[in-house]
Amino acid sequence: MRHFLTILCAMLLLSSCATNRNSASGKGLHPDDVFTITEEDIARETRQINSTIKGVWTYSGPSVDVSGKNILSSLGKPIAKGKLKKKLKNAYKKIGLNKVRPQFSFNEDGTCAIQLLGTSMNGTYNYNPSQGKITFKWHGIPLTARLKRDGKKKVSITFDADKLLKLVSLASKVSDNSAIKALSFLMDHYDDVMVGFELKK
Image 1: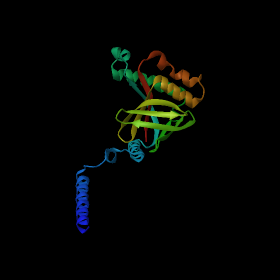
Image 2: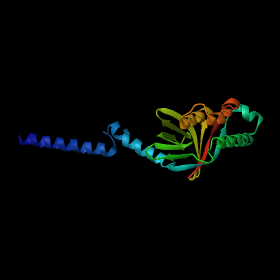
Image 3: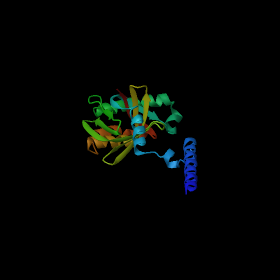
Image 4: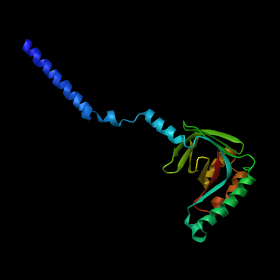
C-alpha cells in the first residue's frame, strides 16, 4: 500500500511539472485564452479613436472636395474647388449659415450633436480614421461623410451633394424651402462633388 502511494505521488508530481512547463511555454493554452476580443476591448479601442476628434467644432467656412472626371477634364482641381467654394459660400449665406454657425460636437462614447439652421440634432457616429470616413445616424437614418483632419484644431467634413441636402432637410424639417433650393444647383450641375464644412475648435 505504501509503495502504491509513493508511485501515485510521483505521478502527480510529474503531471504538475509538465503542466507548469506547458503553461510557461504557451502550450496547452486554448486559442480563446489568447485571441478573445471582449466588448470592453472594443469599447476601449473605440474611445481611443473617438478621442482624436472629441470636442466642439464650429463652422469657419465651406469645404469642397471634387473627384469627378467631368469637372477635372476641363478645369484643374484647385480651380474647380475654388469656383465651387465661392458658389457654396453664397448658398450658405442665403440660408443663414454665416449668422448661426453650425457646430459639431463629438463625445468619446460615440454620441454626437449637430446644431444646424437653428436645430439641434442628437445622434451617434462611427469614425474610421484609416478610411477618412465618418457615419452619422439620426433617428435610424445613416449619413456617411468624409472627415479630414488638419492638425489638432481644424477638420473638414464633406458629404455627397445629395447627402448634404438630406442633412439640411433633417435640420430644416421642410423638404421644399430656400435652403434646399439654394443648394440644389450642386446636384443639377456637378457630378461626384463632396461639399460640407470647414470646422475649428
